[in-house]
Image (cartoon, rainbow, N blue to C red; front, side, top):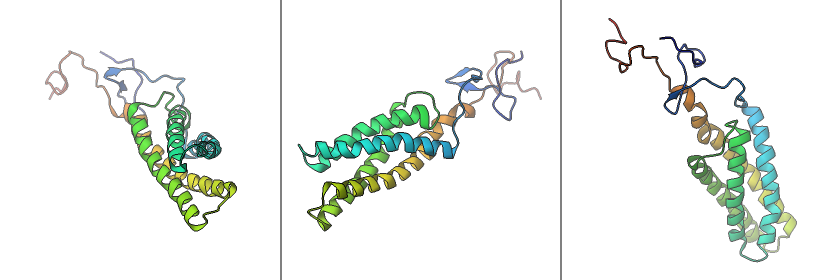
Amino acid sequence: MTSTLASEPGTSRPVRLNGTATAKTPGSPAAPGPLASFLRFVAFGGGVGLASGPAVTLLALSMPWTMANALITIASTVLCTELHARFTFGTGRRAGRREHWQSAGSAAAAYAMTSAAVLVLHTVQPSAGVMREQVVYLSASALAGIGRFLVLRLFVFATRKHAATRRVVRPAASGAPLGSPALNPV
């Protein structure tokens, strides 16, 4: 029996998704390269990050700054993970639970970095104004963002993106299990 399914690139084997052999969709978007991903990451993550700065400042009027930063970090992480899953890294789908938890880990590191930077500022210059605080916060956010990009691209979305091409189906002519003498004549 001959398979009519699309092959994995570089092989003659059909692709298997979630246990079902299927063809790749011809119109499905290819994953963007590193530069395109980084530019999208900057646009989405940077846009949310720029909105986060004033949001933290406004929220900090009614609660401690570190708590305001934690709340804004949680909200912006959920939003950014969804944007990055769908657009930045080209999955074309919503982020799953695994991606959200892994992204939360990198966001926790970013939170620690931004909090430490502002706390150091307040220790060194207790009367620092809002503008100086914003410069320190946004600078720390930019550095943390570069680290997050690397983590998301290389670990969080990389394994999921290529998982479909790792599992392949070998067509079974007789319905016998793979490795049986019917499929592997000697």
